[in-house]
Amino acid sequence: MISAATQRLLDFLSDAESYPHRPPQVTLLQTHASWVFVAPPFVYKIKKPVSLGFLDFSTLELRHADCKHELALNRRLADDIYLGIEPICEHEGHLHFGGYGEVVEWAVKMRQMDPRYFLLQLMQTEEVGTREMDRIVEKLNRFYVSQPPLPAAEVTTANEHLRQGTEDNFKAAARFVGESLSQHALDAIAHYTREFFTRQSALLESRLHDGWIRDCHGDLHLDHIHLSPEAVRIYDCIEFNTDFRCIDVACDIAFLAMDLDFNGRPDLARYIVERFAVLLDDHGIRALMDFYKCYRACVRGKVESLHANAETVPEAEKRSSLQLARRYFQLALQY
Image 1 (spheres, rainbow, N blue to C red):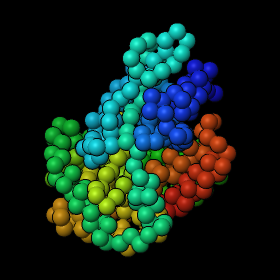
Image 2: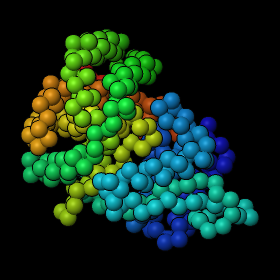
Image 3: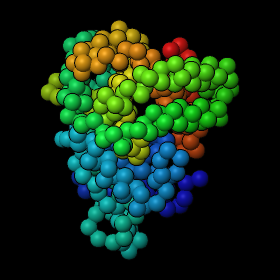
């Protein structure tokens, strides 16, 4: 249940008159962990006061800290989009942006991007091919090269974190058996994953010592890539959990490759993997790709299942998320 204070905040942010720049309208979007208010030409994002195991936004202090992380980390790949952090305050019983009074919430303020150029939208309305992929690959290649390998002391447990992450996915997915996936599918995906850890332990271990564990994006799917004529912007990285972001570069790339598969373009998925293998001189990426894509599809299946079961999500949106979850788990099974 949403508290009265939270509902009051949502009502405030849904009202165009609340914003200093008086947008023509406000559109509310939401994920399992945040509310996003599109108030042209800006976007305001606040964290839901939740604790989900893999993230904790349960106090104002934790949400403020996470806003600061989100701002700093996302400026790496979309520096002109992330404008700052805005306090939402209460004074004499009224809510307002900034200035004076008691801070009741913090919002990340962003510049709104032209919705025509999100990669998922482009793939639905225009012909997207290798030229567009090259722009994305080149941007990400510069980013990965700029990120130093994590120190040895920090990567020794990376594979254990990955293993635990897969097990956490299976535990979470078990809640949705009969809804998002079958028990047979869950068992098959879990068996494949655990067998890979055993059979390819040497390859996974080599990734730690060869410098492939870096501070990446962590959530690299098509809706997080904006491909306008003037620039490539990649936004909304994982800021709330270092283990989800400080990962094998191949695992980061696999998210994008999996989402290209999911959206009917396995040709482009193969293309980007080959391009990265050459540009990064990464000889292990091909052998790891299906494993990492399976993991990434499970993550998306879990996230969409959580969204489909969230109390505050409209029924139509719940049904859509459930269909997406089923498709993601089916794709994981195919790998």
